[in-house]
Amino acid sequence: MFQWLSRPVTYRETLEGNRFEPARADYYTGRPGNSLLQLLQARTDFLSVWRKSDFAEKVSSVRILGRQIVIVNAPSEVRYVVAKRHDNYERKSPQMRRALEHLLGDGLFISDKETWKDRRPLVSDIVHKNRVPAFGPIMSGTAGELVQRWRSLGDGASVNALTEMAGLTAEIISRSVFGNDLGEEKAAVVTDGFARYQSLIDSVNLGYFLGADNGLPVRRTPSLRRSVKRIHGIIDKVIEDHLAGHGENNSMVDLLIRRQQRSPELKLDVVALRNEAATIFMAGHETTAATLTWAWYLLSSARWAEEALHAEIDSVCGTRAPTVADVPGLNWCRAIVEETLRLYPPVPILARQALKADRIGSVDVQPAALIMIVPWLLHRTETLFPDAHHFRPERFLGPERPTPYSYIPFAAGPRVCPGLQFGLSESILCLATLAQHFRVRVREGHKVAPQCRLTLRPIGGLPVTLHPRRAATA
Ligand code: HEM
Image (cartoon, rainbow, N blue to C red; front, side, top):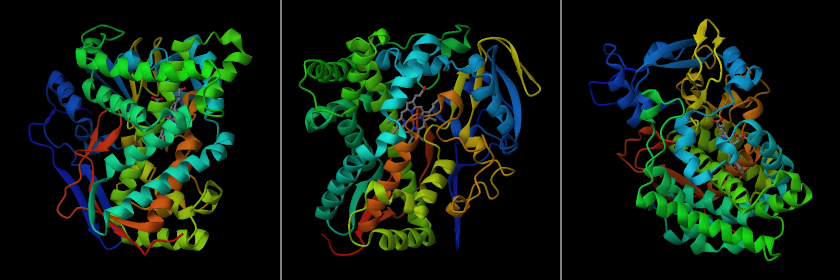
């Protein structure tokens, strides 16, 4: 359970032949400590507060400043929380709601009850797997542009892979949500605004632990207000243009507006449309950027997996650019992405607030308790994933799938990520397009350390060098 660290966090990484254990914080081994200090530690470093014994199938409960926290780390109880008793646990944690409400309003990601019920089918339909082929050309085209830019930098060029992947996925989601007419400059303002917003909000809402069941509003500093105002201003203008008939057909905003026009009872005004567009934008690019960044990190050390990946891309695509139609044939690529999502789930904590008293496994749950399902723990539980800390994409190659509710990078149950197929296809396609042309190597001597904020990222990004695999092809 949470422990206060009286020592600095250390990160381990080992590579012996084909056995690669990528970066993670060492288990905590000291004495249990003061709960306030535990909470403060979790604010900055949530991944280093776990003992070895926490990586086990169980449900446990702890109190911090009088607030009950229940950690659910067993597949059947995960199913109970996210699916069977969804009605009691559908509500996001006050931390998540407070952190994002200023930016997303009542957007799907943080809404519940009737608003969530009304909007969920609308948003799911827009990012549904049947629509992925239509967005495929945006994905492969944008990744292809990045190939050209990387080529222009020359062999051995140094870049930060996290920044590069964030730029790539932001461009893809921006063109998908708003159409091409947002323009590079405005797209950059929106992307920077989102990044800035995230850096300004805290990862723990202390008010909730001090007794406020709904947490306390995040302080709206002038800087926070400015980022929000800029983002809202640009999105509102796109929506107003679309409403006036000047927007690009088949962008997600356009689909949202057409759905609203067909179902006026949904009463989606400009603000509601903006909230959903902002939600899709935010939920749809950070996560994919983190996935791709972690995949480059893993492949940089796991040369046997990289070789298998290259062989597959060469045999499936030859020298032509991969397209969305190739995705079902890119089995290694998919396995690498799935194993990356297991080891480094971009959303490493799914936090909910219990509505009424209940019992999860053998633990009595109080109303307003914080329920935490932690994919970071679940995915690294040895009884569910043998060699749990090791990078073994082979485990996703065969027909066997992980135990239901043990592998949940996209969550599960009624609140499962509606962009699952979009995000998976995008990750596979971008990885294939870039790996067709480049080897990516973590800069020599750089120590990778994962850090959990809203998403799981390497601290300071991922400094890498780029190495063309062969001369440019058509
Ligand atoms: C690798 C990529 C992705 C990962 C790992 C991921 C993961 C997740 C997870 C874990 C949740 C649930 C969070 C929670 O319950 O607390 C979620 C929700 C959501 N995701 Fe994704 N996501 C990805 C890509 C996308 C994409 C590409 C889109 C849109 C195009 C998207 C749209 C959404 C939306 C709208 C929600 C809120 C759903 C609801 O609350 O009903 N995601 N995602």
